[in-house]
Image (tube, rainbow, N blue to C red; front, side):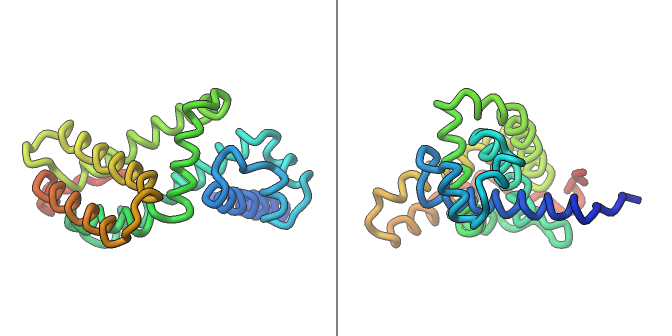
Length: 207
């Protein structure tokens, strides 16, 4: 039976969550470059020392925030208490509820920052690779490509994720929300012809 956390441990976890939530807001509104300890401090309403006690560097703070976000991303898409969504609904839901959200926009900021911040990339590289592998395992346990090939299934889902992230970056240059909706609808319809829900008897159990 797991040991119940002490009051001090719980306070520490609550403080870390508060700091990471403020970091998400800063990343979403300001971008990675402009997200600083001072701005996170102001958003969270805490002292600088409270931040540096848990996260000694900006990279450590952003990496912890990224892992918290990634840990929460899969739950809405992969509920264990109901059947997998049709592919169209899956992709539209991923866009509306995850990618095009404060957390989703923050993750994209972090991924882009990894290209130019070696310290941040070093902290996240292994975890991101493991998360990617886990995410692909989840999709291939519930969906199958039109070819029936697992590798093709995972490739198609990688294409879908990259399209959604790219669309998030492109969104700032689209003047019409209706046009964005049309793009999402068309892409989801195309993916619907390539990915299908596995028959119930073939759905795999994933730890």
